Length: 82
Image (cartoon, rainbow, N blue to C red; front, side, top):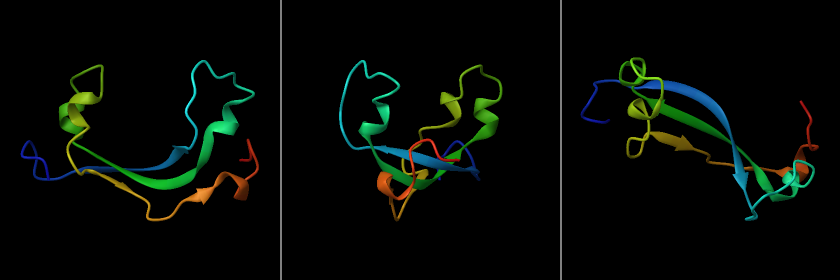
């Protein structure tokens, strides 16, 4: 828990795991750089982010982003599938 707050706000998200580096990648080739997907819990302090136009002040505290524990590989979900 960051010292700036007594509780965290939780945001369930899907993390895209990059498996291959690149630069100036076209949209068509972007799928080739994705290794897979995983659950991500983005813990933040919303009251610190709310007064700002950027959300950074309420995020990026050490150890507040729960990740995993499993990864779904790109081959298990068709590219662009809903």
